[in-house]
Image (tube, rainbow, N blue to C red; front, side, top):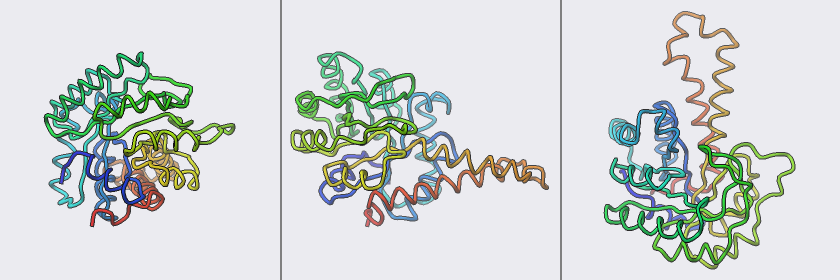
Length: 287
């Protein structure tokens, strides 16, 4: 069933596991995420950035794609359609387009403006039963043109944002988007615990690609209940597709047919999601 993300994340928070947030980029991605979640009987969050929404034809196209595939594949586990790193205008557009969850990322704005706009998004979204994620303290790396060094979020600012009635909080704790550099210092668990104690709500870990399993599990035990994965699925898809082409399989029979050409990559996405579901401890959590 299509739901907002609040109930699934509250349940994860209370029971010590994390729900996977997997970004979609097209039809194959969406199918892979839905099928993997159904097979492992876990609730799942299918997300799209504003750039991915634009690539796929717009917010309504993405919302309808997830909804229609969910119904035609007879998916029984809870599924949320989530906007990732939304702007103020983007979040408002997704609230109207049929998304069940939105992130308003005001972390690059002055604090007062972030608070003011987050409050408005919360009111608009909650009036339609849509969950809201907000961010304070930038996540390192670049996503959709927003670049940050990955500073540690200020605990007092986290508290102010949480008090606006948001459903889950993204806070910088040394995590970055994309591939982690060799000299990465790791997550700041001291800051995570301070934030977790201050806000008492599910915390979101962005940049889930490449964080070592022991750090993922420690983060979950400290209140992280949603972990975002995108780059790792993209890398798996690209690797499998490259191997298919380099082996000349696209030149065998009708191997050029997109249904065959994209199949190995789609399967690689599913395998990556299976690994993450096991790591996050959410398998069978929908039961």
